[in-house]
Length: 197
Image (cartoon, rainbow, N blue to C red; front, side, top):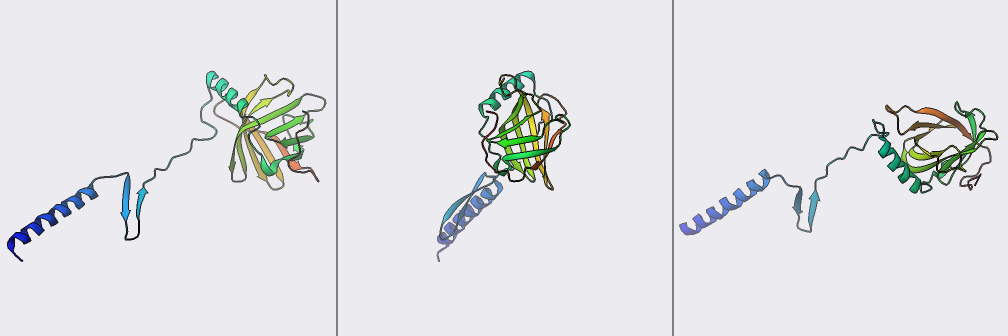
């Protein structure tokens, strides 16, 4: 092989080697993997830490009003799934006179004695191990829907009971209080229509 060809081959080899080293030293967002059968683009992904729930700070008055309006617009779009149905109240510190609670069509409803019908309409629900994390609008009187407040709602299954705890949006640090401890009414059907319409 003539010397001129050896030099040309050497120059090309050095150029290819330099290009390869340069590629390895340059960080990239995507790598192209080439095989004899196919070419794929493999992207690096960055893990995103979910926002804490509930938020560690209370909502400002403006944020509260905006969120309440948004929650009202998304009311009845959440499905409580197999939790739907009629439940017997085993314990309730704020509502000792309540005997039954209904979960239906994204609502939690109850009536204390002859008082007004209370309604929590879920606007967001996230399934978590053992239950749900949710947010909703609470109407202490279903007949006056303009009077609403925002609640974080935590629903957990514990043995044969369903625990429902709540916390207001505008208080920090958020501390949940026990609302209801429930057991399913014998013979109750899932997905019954909401009462007290």
